Length: 274
Image (tube, rainbow, N blue to C red; front, side, top):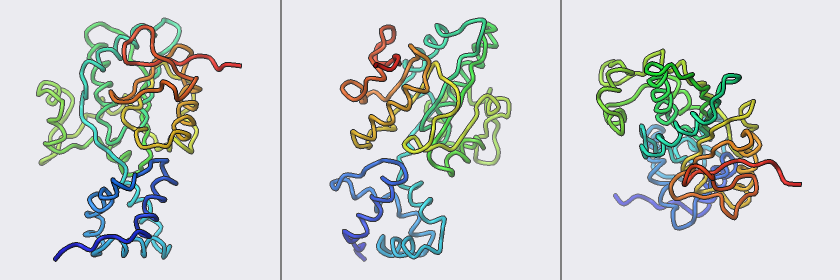
Protein backbone atom coordinates (compact mmCIF):
# COMPACT_ATOMS: atom_id res chain seq x y z
CA UNK A 1 0.00 0.00 0.00
CA UNK A 2 1.32 3.43 -0.94
CA UNK A 3 1.71 5.68 2.15
CA UNK A 4 -0.76 8.56 2.31
CA UNK A 5 0.97 11.91 1.85
CA UNK A 6 0.43 14.30 4.74
CA UNK A 7 -1.86 17.25 4.21
CA UNK A 8 -0.40 20.73 4.05
CA UNK A 9 -2.21 21.48 7.30
CA UNK A 10 -0.41 18.62 9.06
CA UNK A 11 2.93 19.76 7.66
CA UNK A 12 2.27 23.32 8.83
CA UNK A 13 1.31 22.22 12.34
CA UNK A 14 4.38 20.01 12.76
CA UNK A 15 6.87 22.53 11.40
CA UNK A 16 5.30 25.29 13.51
CA UNK A 17 5.60 23.10 16.62
CA UNK A 18 9.28 22.45 15.96
CA UNK A 19 10.04 26.13 15.38
CA UNK A 20 8.09 27.24 18.45
CA UNK A 21 9.90 24.74 20.71
CA UNK A 22 13.43 24.92 19.29
CA UNK A 23 13.70 27.74 16.76
CA UNK A 24 14.56 25.21 14.05
CA UNK A 25 12.89 25.54 10.67
CA UNK A 26 12.14 22.87 8.08
CA UNK A 27 12.10 24.26 4.55
CA UNK A 28 9.25 23.15 2.31
CA UNK A 29 11.61 21.15 0.10
CA UNK A 30 12.73 19.17 3.17
CA UNK A 31 9.25 18.29 4.43
CA UNK A 32 10.03 14.65 3.57
CA UNK A 33 11.97 14.65 6.86
CA UNK A 34 8.70 14.75 8.77
CA UNK A 35 7.53 11.39 7.45
CA UNK A 36 10.94 9.77 7.85
CA UNK A 37 11.61 11.03 11.38
CA UNK A 38 8.12 10.38 12.72
CA UNK A 39 7.63 6.84 11.36
CA UNK A 40 8.76 5.17 14.63
CA UNK A 41 6.32 7.34 16.61
CA UNK A 42 3.50 6.45 14.22
CA UNK A 43 4.26 2.74 14.67
CA UNK A 44 4.41 3.14 18.44
CA UNK A 45 0.94 4.72 18.46
CA UNK A 46 -0.58 2.41 15.84
CA UNK A 47 -1.21 5.33 13.51
CA UNK A 48 -1.06 5.27 9.73
CA UNK A 49 -0.61 8.94 8.82
CA UNK A 50 0.87 12.19 10.04
CA UNK A 51 -2.60 13.71 9.89
CA UNK A 52 -3.73 11.22 12.53
CA UNK A 53 -0.73 12.16 14.67
CA UNK A 54 -1.56 15.85 14.35
CA UNK A 55 -5.15 15.10 15.35
CA UNK A 56 -3.86 13.54 18.58
CA UNK A 57 -1.55 16.51 19.12
CA UNK A 58 -4.33 19.06 18.71
CA UNK A 59 -6.68 17.02 20.85
CA UNK A 60 -4.56 18.07 23.84
CA UNK A 61 -5.26 15.07 26.06
CA UNK A 62 -1.78 13.59 25.72
CA UNK A 63 0.68 16.11 27.13
CA UNK A 64 3.73 14.07 26.10
CA UNK A 65 3.00 13.81 22.40
CA UNK A 66 4.37 17.26 21.56
CA UNK A 67 7.65 16.46 23.32
CA UNK A 68 7.94 13.17 21.47
CA UNK A 69 7.31 14.81 18.12
CA UNK A 70 9.97 17.46 18.75
CA UNK A 71 12.46 14.86 20.01
CA UNK A 72 11.97 12.88 16.80
CA UNK A 73 12.37 15.90 14.53
CA UNK A 74 15.46 17.44 16.11
CA UNK A 75 18.62 16.29 14.35
CA UNK A 76 20.64 14.31 16.91
CA UNK A 77 23.46 13.21 14.59
CA UNK A 78 26.65 12.88 16.63
CA UNK A 79 29.65 10.64 17.20
CA UNK A 80 32.73 10.34 19.39
CA UNK A 81 35.70 12.58 18.51
CA UNK A 82 34.00 13.95 15.40
CA UNK A 83 36.71 15.86 13.48
CA UNK A 84 39.68 14.82 15.63
CA UNK A 85 41.76 17.88 14.70
CA UNK A 86 39.06 20.10 16.17
CA UNK A 87 39.42 18.32 19.50
CA UNK A 88 43.20 18.77 19.38
CA UNK A 89 42.73 22.52 18.97
CA UNK A 90 40.19 22.63 21.80
CA UNK A 91 42.73 21.04 24.12
CA UNK A 92 45.22 23.75 23.11
CA UNK A 93 42.61 26.45 23.76
CA UNK A 94 41.92 25.09 27.24
CA UNK A 95 45.65 24.91 28.01
CA UNK A 96 46.01 28.59 27.11
CA UNK A 97 43.08 29.52 29.33
CA UNK A 98 44.36 27.65 32.38
CA UNK A 99 45.69 29.56 35.38
CA UNK A 100 46.44 28.80 39.01
CA UNK A 101 43.58 30.94 40.27
CA UNK A 102 40.56 29.34 38.58
CA UNK A 103 39.17 26.31 36.83
CA UNK A 104 38.54 26.39 33.07
CA UNK A 105 34.86 26.04 32.15
CA UNK A 106 33.47 24.37 28.99
CA UNK A 107 29.89 24.43 27.71
CA UNK A 108 28.70 21.92 25.09
CA UNK A 109 25.47 23.36 23.69
CA UNK A 110 23.29 20.90 21.78
CA UNK A 111 25.14 17.89 23.18
CA UNK A 112 22.67 15.30 21.87
CA UNK A 113 23.23 11.86 23.44
CA UNK A 114 26.55 12.89 24.97
CA UNK A 115 29.31 11.69 22.66
CA UNK A 116 30.85 15.16 22.32
CA UNK A 117 31.17 16.05 26.03
CA UNK A 118 32.23 12.48 26.81
CA UNK A 119 34.99 12.80 24.20
CA UNK A 120 36.20 15.97 25.91
CA UNK A 121 36.01 14.36 29.33
CA UNK A 122 38.13 11.42 28.15
CA UNK A 123 40.75 13.74 26.66
CA UNK A 124 41.11 15.88 29.75
CA UNK A 125 40.95 12.95 32.17
CA UNK A 126 43.76 11.23 30.25
CA UNK A 127 45.75 14.46 30.21
CA UNK A 128 45.32 14.74 33.98
CA UNK A 129 46.57 11.17 34.42
CA UNK A 130 49.71 11.73 32.36
CA UNK A 131 50.64 15.32 33.23
CA UNK A 132 48.68 16.28 36.31
CA UNK A 133 46.95 19.08 34.39
CA UNK A 134 43.71 20.29 36.02
CA UNK A 135 40.35 18.95 34.92
CA UNK A 136 38.06 21.59 33.41
CA UNK A 137 34.42 21.87 34.39
CA UNK A 138 32.19 20.54 31.59
CA UNK A 139 28.51 21.48 31.27
CA UNK A 140 26.46 19.86 28.49
CA UNK A 141 22.96 20.94 27.45
CA UNK A 142 20.30 19.90 24.96
CA UNK A 143 16.71 20.87 24.24
CA UNK A 144 15.44 17.29 24.52
CA UNK A 145 14.68 15.71 27.88
CA UNK A 146 14.89 12.27 26.26
CA UNK A 147 18.41 12.67 24.86
CA UNK A 148 19.66 14.31 28.07
CA UNK A 149 18.38 11.28 29.95
CA UNK A 150 20.28 9.04 27.52
CA UNK A 151 23.42 11.16 27.87
CA UNK A 152 23.28 10.98 31.66
CA UNK A 153 22.92 7.19 31.47
CA UNK A 154 25.92 6.95 29.12
CA UNK A 155 24.54 3.89 27.32
CA UNK A 156 25.50 3.22 23.70
CA UNK A 157 24.89 0.52 21.14
CA UNK A 158 27.72 -1.33 19.41
CA UNK A 159 27.18 0.85 16.34
CA UNK A 160 27.33 4.09 18.37
CA UNK A 161 30.38 3.14 20.41
CA UNK A 162 32.41 2.26 17.31
CA UNK A 163 31.81 5.63 15.64
CA UNK A 164 35.02 7.50 16.35
CA UNK A 165 36.06 5.68 19.51
CA UNK A 166 39.25 3.55 19.38
CA UNK A 167 39.25 0.17 21.12
CA UNK A 168 41.65 1.25 23.86
CA UNK A 169 39.26 4.01 24.95
CA UNK A 170 36.25 1.70 24.69
CA UNK A 171 37.92 -0.67 27.15
CA UNK A 172 39.31 2.07 29.42
CA UNK A 173 36.18 4.17 29.81
CA UNK A 174 33.21 1.84 29.16
CA UNK A 175 31.80 -1.42 30.50
CA UNK A 176 29.67 -3.88 28.55
CA UNK A 177 26.12 -4.71 29.62
CA UNK A 178 24.53 -7.18 27.26
CA UNK A 179 24.76 -5.63 23.81
CA UNK A 180 25.36 -2.12 25.15
CA UNK A 181 28.41 -0.17 26.28
CA UNK A 182 27.99 1.94 29.40
CA UNK A 183 30.24 4.84 30.38
CA UNK A 184 31.95 4.30 33.71
CA UNK A 185 30.69 6.41 36.62
CA UNK A 186 34.08 8.11 36.96
CA UNK A 187 33.71 9.44 33.40
CA UNK A 188 30.08 10.49 33.71
CA UNK A 189 30.86 12.32 36.95
CA UNK A 190 33.05 14.76 35.01
CA UNK A 191 30.05 16.20 33.11
CA UNK A 192 26.98 18.12 34.31
CA UNK A 193 24.13 17.36 31.89
CA UNK A 194 21.24 19.83 31.83
CA UNK A 195 18.12 20.32 29.74
CA UNK A 196 18.18 23.75 28.05
CA UNK A 197 16.49 25.42 25.09
CA UNK A 198 19.11 27.58 23.36
CA UNK A 199 16.46 29.95 22.03
CA UNK A 200 14.26 30.54 25.06
CA UNK A 201 16.20 29.54 28.19
CA UNK A 202 19.03 31.42 29.93
CA UNK A 203 22.48 29.86 29.51
CA UNK A 204 24.02 27.82 32.32
CA UNK A 205 25.23 30.09 35.15
CA UNK A 206 28.73 31.55 35.04
CA UNK A 207 31.06 32.37 32.19
CA UNK A 208 32.85 29.94 29.91
CA UNK A 209 36.32 29.74 28.37
CA UNK A 210 35.23 27.34 25.62
CA UNK A 211 31.78 26.91 24.08
CA UNK A 212 30.87 24.25 21.52
CA UNK A 213 27.73 24.61 19.40
CA UNK A 214 28.46 22.41 16.41
CA UNK A 215 25.89 21.90 13.65
CA UNK A 216 23.13 23.01 16.01
CA UNK A 217 22.14 26.37 14.51
CA UNK A 218 22.00 25.31 10.86
CA UNK A 219 18.22 25.45 10.61
CA UNK A 220 17.52 28.59 12.65
CA UNK A 221 16.26 31.77 11.04
CA UNK A 222 18.79 34.66 10.76
CA UNK A 223 17.06 36.62 13.54
CA UNK A 224 17.01 33.60 15.85
CA UNK A 225 20.67 32.92 15.14
CA UNK A 226 21.58 36.49 16.08
CA UNK A 227 19.66 36.07 19.31
CA UNK A 228 21.46 32.82 20.14
CA UNK A 229 24.89 34.23 19.22
CA UNK A 230 24.32 37.19 21.53
CA UNK A 231 23.30 34.83 24.34
CA UNK A 232 26.36 32.64 23.83
CA UNK A 233 28.69 35.63 23.60
CA UNK A 234 27.34 36.99 26.89
CA UNK A 235 28.01 33.62 28.56
CA UNK A 236 31.68 33.61 27.54
CA UNK A 237 34.71 35.16 29.13
CA UNK A 238 36.23 37.95 27.00
CA UNK A 239 38.51 36.23 24.51
CA UNK A 240 36.87 32.85 25.14
CA UNK A 241 36.83 30.38 22.25
CA UNK A 242 33.66 29.42 20.34
CA UNK A 243 33.49 26.32 18.12
CA UNK A 244 30.91 25.67 15.39
CA UNK A 245 30.53 23.03 12.70
CA UNK A 246 32.79 23.06 9.65
CA UNK A 247 30.11 24.57 7.41
CA UNK A 248 28.96 27.24 9.87
CA UNK A 249 30.10 30.80 10.52
CA UNK A 250 29.28 33.81 12.68
CA UNK A 251 30.63 36.28 10.11
CA UNK A 252 28.01 38.86 9.16
CA UNK A 253 25.58 37.53 11.78
CA UNK A 254 26.72 38.96 15.11
CA UNK A 255 29.05 41.46 16.74
CA UNK A 256 29.38 39.35 19.89
CA UNK A 257 31.81 36.91 18.24
CA UNK A 258 34.65 37.27 15.74
CA UNK A 259 37.20 34.98 14.05
CA UNK A 260 39.82 33.73 16.50
CA UNK A 261 43.25 35.27 16.18
CA UNK A 262 44.85 32.07 17.47
CA UNK A 263 42.82 29.10 16.25
CA UNK A 264 41.89 28.87 12.59
CA UNK A 265 38.21 28.09 12.07
CA UNK A 266 37.29 28.99 15.65
CA UNK A 267 35.78 32.21 16.94
CA UNK A 268 36.27 34.29 20.05
CA UNK A 269 34.05 36.44 22.21
CA UNK A 270 34.56 40.14 22.54
CA UNK A 271 33.22 42.79 24.94
CA UNK A 272 29.85 44.30 23.99
CA UNK A 273 30.13 47.41 21.88
CA UNK A 274 28.59 50.69 23.03
